[in-house]
Image (cartoon, rainbow, N blue to C red):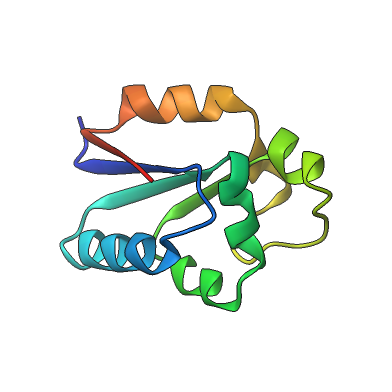
Length: 101
């Protein structure tokens, strides 16, 4: 394994905790990957979401994002980072630690 922390966010709450956890792991030199799914995709619309850029590899469930009628650019999330649940499954396998919100 490569000292990687995976975080899956399926709630529209606790963005402050996700940011603090990503900051702390990044400061310790850990690789951080975050996957937003379900209600968690709503957090991409909050201004403080941008604090995650550069601290973690960010991915968003495309089905959830579009299903909730969201559209447009998301800071730190490129076209290929709008993904399926397969990305979440890959993250579970690749990460040393996996945390859910």
